[in-house]
Every structure is written in C-alpha cells, then in structure tokens.
Picture 1 (cartoon, one colour):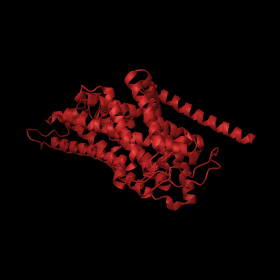
Picture 2 (cartoon, one colour):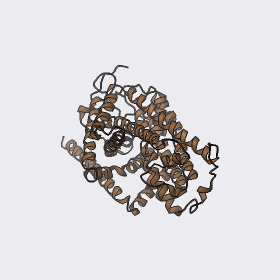
Picture 3 (tube, helix red, strand yellow):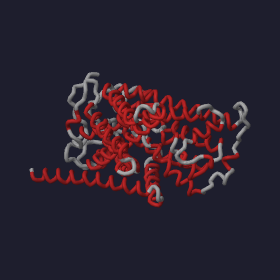
Picture 4 (cartoon, helix red, strand yellow):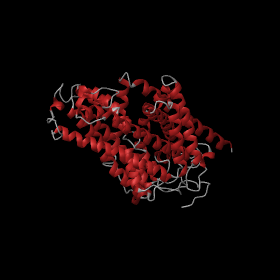
Length: 482
C-alpha cells in the first residue's frame, strides 16, 4: 500500500490530555507506517528476540550462583516474562500501535506514563545497541585481526541502517533468518545433550542424572541461590516486547500478535529451561563459570569439534540479530512519541513505503554516540549509561502490568469483542506479576552487585518522570492562561 509522506493522526490523547479526558481505550487511529511483516516474521521475532548472548554466554553466571537450581530460576523468570508478554499481547491485539506499551500506558494512565515509558525504552534500546555492535565487532576482529574493531562497528551500523531504511520487510527477513539460525543451534544442542545423557553418542557412556543431585545437591546454595539466579537471568528475557511493536506493521495486526504471543512464550520457555536442564545434567554445575559460555563447555565435553568456533558464530549472529531488532524497535518507539507530540515533529516524515526514515536515523545517530562512548570509555562514561538502563526493564514491565489492569476493564465495557487474546486469571495473575517485580527490586537492593545498577536505573527513571510531569504542568499553565 502506498502511503503519503505526511503521517495521519493517531487516536491518542491530544496535547495536554490527561487520563480523565483521554479517548476511549479502544480507539485505534490509522497507522501511517507501512505493512510488510508476515506471520512467519513475527513468530520468529518472538522466538529469536530474546535468544541472544545473554543466554549463550550470560547463563554461566546464573549457574555459578544457583547450581542445578538454575532450572528453577529460569522457570520463575520465564513465567514472569510470559505473564508480561500475555498482558502485552492482550492490549496489542485489541489496540495495535507502533508505540505498543507506550501508547497503552498513555491511554491507561495519562501522558506522563506514555512519555516516560516510551523515552526510557528508547534510551534502553540505543544504549544496548552499542553493547551488541561492540560485541559483534570484537568477535569479527578475532576472525580478521587486520580490520580494526571500529571499522567492523561502522560496517554493521551502516549495513543495518540501510536495511531498516529500505523497507520493513527487510528487517523482517533478516530477523527471520537470524532467529532461525539461533533456534536451530539450540535444538541441535538439546538433541546432542540428550544423546550424551543417555549414552547414545559414539565412544561415550551414559551420563545419567547424577550431576543434578551430586556436587552439593540440586540446590547447593539453597533457595537463596535460586532467587539470586532469578535476578541474574531475568533481564535476558528483555526483547520480547519488540514483537508487539512490530505487530502494528503486519498484514493483520490483531491476529498476528495473538498468534506470535501464543507460540513464542511457550517455546522460549522450553528453549531456555531445556537448555539449562541439559547443561547441568551433562556436566557438574561447578564446571561452569561466569564469562564463559556453558554451551561451549558442554559441547567440548561431548567431543563436538571446534565447539568454541561454532558457538562464536552463533553468538555473533545473535548479537547482530539483537542490533537489528533494537534499531527497529527504537525507531518505531521514537516515531510513536513524535506522533503523540512527545518528540520532535520532524521525526514524523514517512517514506513512500511507510518507513519512518528520520526516526531510524535519529535512533542510529544516538546509537553511534553510544558505540563511541563504549569504545572510548567502556569503564566510565558508557558504564554509567549502561547501569542507568540496566534495571529499566522492570519499570517498563511494571507500567505494562498497571496499564493492563486499567485498560482491561475499559475494553470490557466499550468493545469486549476486541479481547481476542486474554490475560490468564485476570486480575489475580497480573497482581501476582507486579508483586514478583517488587520482590526482584527488593532482591536487587540487597545484592551488592546489582544495587548500583538498580540505583542508576531508578535515577534515570525518576528523571524521565520528572520531565514528563514538568511538561504536563507547563502545558496546563499555558492552557490556563489562554
């Protein structure tokens, strides 16, 4: 479909609107962005969006603190992520929008909420984008040391910027194949792990299940270890939210997001928990350590040749996949903010194919700044930026839950037929998810390693909210004088 370069107005509160005078919860104005994402794109985006370096490498830190109990840690963290995804799916199926949960928060709680969660999430994505670009460049530099690291970063950023500027289907195709490779890698790992456990591989004896209960038992550090493991692994589930942002640009947003959410949450939980179960069964949990991929350790132990190189390739693809997804998600979020008057109106320029090119360029420009800070001052300036968004995901998830509590009742009154996907056991499970997030925050306060990240993130969140309230106060003052 051909779109005019000037965007149409979205049916969200006008400038100065509050939660009281906001339009009906079910209003869904015309979406100026172009379609092009197929169901297969969204399904694989939902699967691959959270299968990244945090799983392939970062899971070693979780095993170190929880032992075999890391399986329970992933079950708990995965259950919370599934609840958040279900809430998002319910709202996005009823009200598809390029700003997704930012739009939902504005409709449910007022402009301050939409502004705060939108800008915070945008900042989170463009900062993490720098980590991914730098990480991928380091791996590429190992393969081709003659090419400096900064040149690889430049190449990746330019390539994916071009792909996102061309058409949304390019983003969808890249993510489809990136996610397919990651899913294939995990399935292959699960199969090899099961064969090793039952002694089916050549020249191997059955491993059995002795490692699950040996070496200190299934819970060597008790339930404290499991709880600490939840704090370590929870943020690896960040990224699921992008599938609901992308749904607004699919051929059938309502059905697409419902199907993507239903298929993704169970499979992701299976991949995460299944992987951890294989890892702590094949080898003693004491064989794993933070900073080293437990997948490589397991593959080496069962005799897979060049396991480290193979996993480096998978991690490389995972980093590029996340870079691509975060660039897409950040551009759509800032476009949605501009659409609602919460970001410069100049970002609203849309190409003939429905791509918000200025929003893409604005996001990648800040991404370049983040990369330069990461390359120049990784242990100072950039570390502060990274800490300031490290726990911001909890704020985003918390507002998603509160928005769902408010909007569900309004949708039931105004247009119950739009509830094609419903949150389980509403409202009790939503409240339980909010309570779980509060517990995670308390645990981070107690944890010496996680506390600085939480405090920096809380400071960044408070700053954004203060700016949002100041804008509302100023706009109300202007209206009062007119």
